[in-house]
Image (cartoon, rainbow, N blue to C red; front, side, top):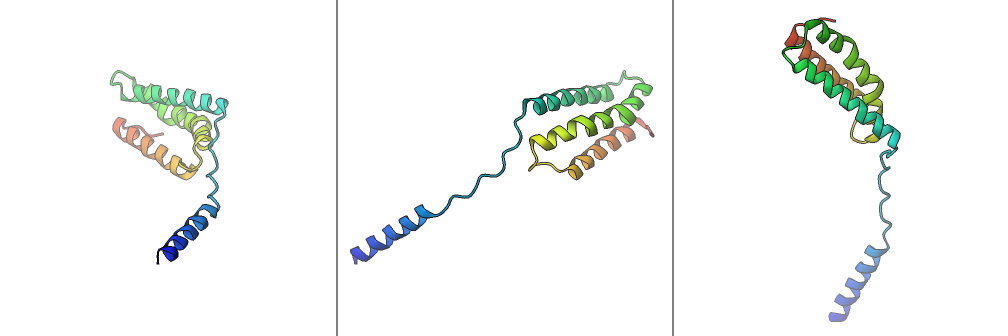
Length: 114
């Protein structure tokens, strides 16, 4: 009885050890240029949001940010860099939806139409 149990355990260990390990998922890009682009763009977007939240920002500046600067920076720099850095976490559709949510929030909050 002990021999059968020992043989079964050894066979299970052998089969388990011989299974091919799954391939790791493709690595996200670690290109320093893309990382730098993302960080610079993230900083600009942060400044735009700070200006939009500042009650002392004039309405013309808010219109410029919401209708031109923020969407342009987001679409041309932030989004492409983020998609290259984390392709499995984000999609273009998801990021554009997040942009629309943010823009609509600030447009409604500040009564702005582009």
